[in-house]
Image (cartoon, rainbow, N blue to C red; front, side, top):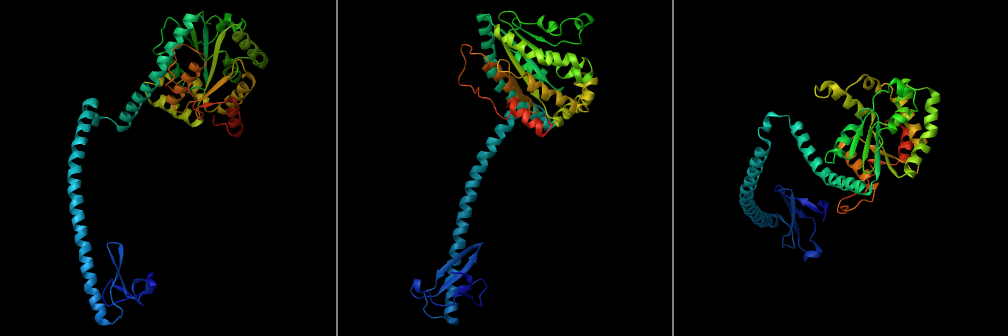
Length: 372
């Protein structure tokens, strides 16, 4: 029944139906509200007058009192339960607090964000550790089978290449891997075949060489800063695919990783380098121009990915705004490149498609926006 079916009485909050309700034995219905709950009760009267309404009020008051008493009883029970729960919860919280103090020491003296960042790094390190164990198995396999592996780390400045290399090699046997980061070529090297100074550092049997920037300097950095001619750039772009195909055909395992950082995240990392005394040494004159030359780098990046991606030596694009996820995906790509012995299939080796991006998807994104 709707409120329109009732009429207000002289008693506040009490309504009586306008007519006797046929469903309830042709008797009148009373309606009232208590603590936002609406109650409807059959009055038990077949006629309606002031006396009836007064009797209805007495009847309703008894019902209302019973509701209030019931509520009180429930509240007492709830309060009692709360006390018991509160005691248990307080004891649990105290135990947790004591544990945190024993682990963190005088944590009140530190910025909560610093602590949060530090704890997250512990979680990230533990997640990565399981895959680092797999890297050791991979390294053992390469040594036993006398196989050679080259991993190229490319990307804009502050894209996370160095951090990824450190995590990948952290637990490896240092007798069987090398990290190569070549500086400016000497006068002698400038007059040699461009790729010769890289070939000198290629791995022997059972060895991994990780290039922190590689021969792809000629595809991006050198032409932008005028370190090579347009002709030298074109010769490289035309020859590099065949060069890499020959390497793979001769048994080299070649993995090409491109760490793709967004413009905003690169700026944030540069700002951090400038303001953090522990990171200021990382900031260089080239870094200062990276944001201003973003468009030029984007054009060269697009051409590099489009023209040097091949079936035998494909590019793997790793979105690196989230450093931990980027490192994890880079490790997965390396592990998935070889069918090594003793693989732990309980781990997730599937690529995260939000981080591990196909070249085609990256190029399509770049056509829409140069944010990466």
